[in-house]
Length: 48
Image 1 (cartoon, helix red, strand yellow):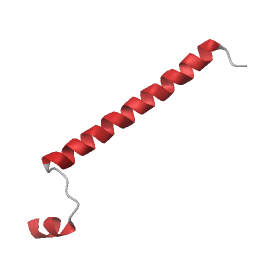
Image 2: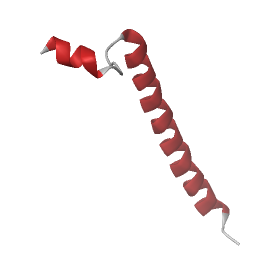
Image 3: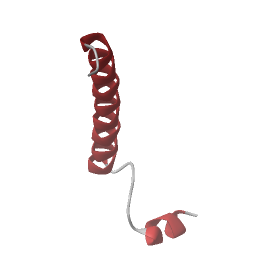
Image 4: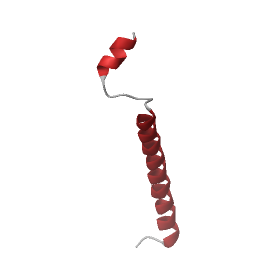
């Protein structure tokens, strides 16, 4: 059975990775909401 110290360390690593993914996802959603990104390729072609 694993000791508590190692399990706390592994939990900390997973919590840090989860927080980073949530932060990046939130920034991407905010970018789409603000209009910084678009899903339509036609607007990119029209801007050139």
